[in-house]
Amino acid sequence: MMRSLWTSASGMSGQQFTVDTIANNLANVNTAGFKKSRVDFQDLLYQTLRFAGTPVTAGAQIPTGIQVGHGVRPVATVKIFSQGTFRETDNPLDLVIEGDGFFQILLPDGTVAYTRDGAFKKDSEGRIVTSDGFVLEPEIIVPQDAVEVSVGSDGTVSAVLLGDSQPITIGTIELARFVNPAGLRSYGRNLFLATAASGQPIVGQPGMDGFGSIAQGFLEMSNVQVVEEMVNLILAQRAYDANSKAIQASDDMLNTANNLRR
Amino acid sequence: MVRGLFSAGSAMLVFSGRQDLLANDLANAATPGYRTEVAPVAAFPEMLIHRELRTVRTPRGLAGTGAYIERSYTRWDPAPARYTGRNLDLAIEGDGFFVVQSAAGPRLTRAGNFTIGSDGVLVTQDGLPVLGLDGPVRTGRVTDGEIAVTQEGAVMTEDGRFLGQILVVDVPDRQGLVREGSNLFRYTAESGGPVRVDARVQQGMLEGSGTSVIGTMVEMIAGMRAYQAAQQAVRAHDQMTEALIAQLGRTS
Image (cartoon, rainbow over the protein chains, first blue to last red):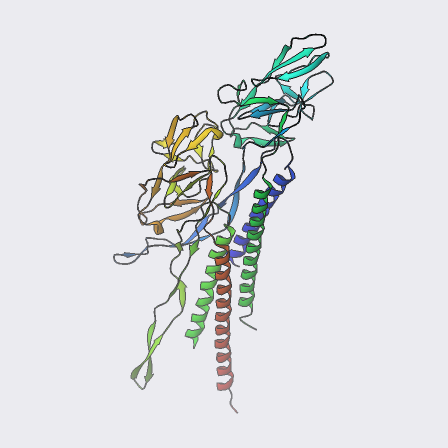
């Protein structure tokens, strides 16, 4: 049958994949620390029906051949790590990273995950944890009798204990950077995992060489722009429609061929 | 008689082949740096036909013998670029190509949606290194957020450290380039080798696809109707032949 049927089918499934990605971006429009994704496409292999440069007669060659493509495939979902908007919350354990870097989170199985979501809490033992109860790495324990916790821009966490006037340092937050953050694997729960593509984490102190600094009492919201996603949604839907029309056109042609003989 | 049948049949084959090309253009309506392909229809050579009557040949005029697709062209007109804000999206203004190192040698591409490999080399989404003036562009331990690309294609850190110069090339005859898929073009003897040109690179922009959805749709409708018209011609020939056989075969 016709190549174009499969070609257009690849176009439809590609655009469907785009819509899936946009839907996830829009679903997470208010998720703290969420980073939007984008689908990047590539054309598929080409079949060469006629090679350029084939001699036709003495001294003459075909200048351009005939090549037929077979459609499209998604090649990557590129995560875009631009900064999200900051929202003031006045909660002392809501932290944002102004600039580059990730908070390090220790998962129960011992692996370290990375997040931009700084909505931290205290657990029953006073440890600073994520909303899922995963511990911030390196571990920081807020004493039972602390009245006030403050986090400096260099990641120093200090607390004023009951009856004292001077704050004491109870720990330091360290951040991790990656050469290729786009290569991180999304783990869900606002967490990312390191992969061979992202490279090994580079750990350092906030505010130092290339690391962002920390601000207390703010949350980084998602970097999803609703208008942009809507425009992309319209484009994806129209491209989907166009490809379905191409399938119809190919189908009509096949039908026409079938009616050659009545 | 039969000649007309083949001519009309050849037209059907042409429009079915063009439909394949149009479908590929539409499928790639969102592929960065994609370029559409057009296939002009060529006529088979016309023949002088004669009438032969008792060894006297009188020329009767020219008869066409149908149509075929002789070649397909790539349309190199610039495609619209859009602002993405992503640091490693690069668009070439005007003519030219990025050069990437595939396993089979250097290849050309217009798709500038790059990323950084874990070894700190600027790569395509397939992991092929992007070539600079002296080998692949190495960003070292700089993350993508801190990379600035000047209009001339120089890759710098935010604090002005020079990391490399992106290579932008062009070929003498772009029609000689062969499409390889994966957004890559291969240069050949017909296209001539790549020549470095002055780059005009826009950071944070990504070139879209050269497919015009409206234009492709119109072409598709026209092709479909031409296909149907050719089918009608085939059927008319068929009916004439049928009538001929039925009439001539009558004995009473």
